[in-house]
Length: 338
Image 1: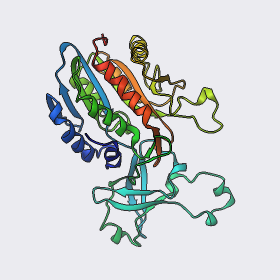
Image 2: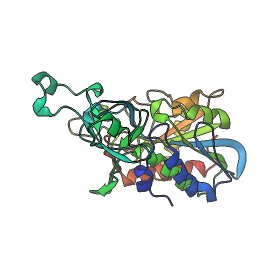
Image 3: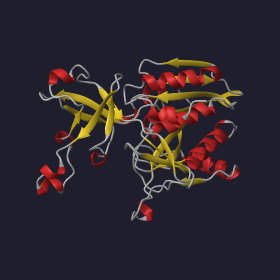
């Protein structure tokens, strides 16, 4: 069974998911009826169900937020832009890994003792930051990197405290790990387990895969922002780490099917699975692209609450991850998804 640690530590920014895809493919192939990769890089695993009355798709995205090199200065600094939404306040001083060569770099900005009073009162913008790879000229830098190379935060998976996990890329390698466990089980309906690409830059893998499969229902498994931090008001916390699987009725891109939303709550209660309802409308997932595809597809959103999402140190609780898995399993092994 593939470990979450190995998935999170893998290199896979948007558009460069090959390492993650190959790891998942090797893990799930013995349990699938058919496994294939489409033209955009989505990994699709079909599993025959007990019934062909409905067609179900369960989705998680393989990519993580990252960086793309866009210019190399004469003194060897790498100018970059982000792949996905990364808060610039969590970037300076972080180690990154660049390209399949695994070049180590440091996200850097002007030292604080060199900043003006006005600069110290503001967050350093991305166009004033750079990646330092320890060279002093463009010619030397070009031995290691090229314009267009991509980077991610350095792998740093760690278990700590009372059942907590800290890592880069929990969004959405956690979802991928859930699908890898689910495919080992017998399913009620013909089910497509889809590991999508490019979610962080606009759900670009989910659209073609939804048109290929044309499912009746789709379950999207994600990590979602938890705002249960000091001084955050209750109404703005969205969800809380340690309070179970997160059910979503609406986010920044999707209004979820109400009948299926209610069914998911009933399923959680029936199986005594801890759950919570996201109380803040923000963010977005592959659900938005899937729901709009073909002639419209019914979508369920299941998520794990995650602190400091899209940073080098995303934090989740193992019990929440298990609750999401249990709820997804209860849904795909029953005949209730009408």
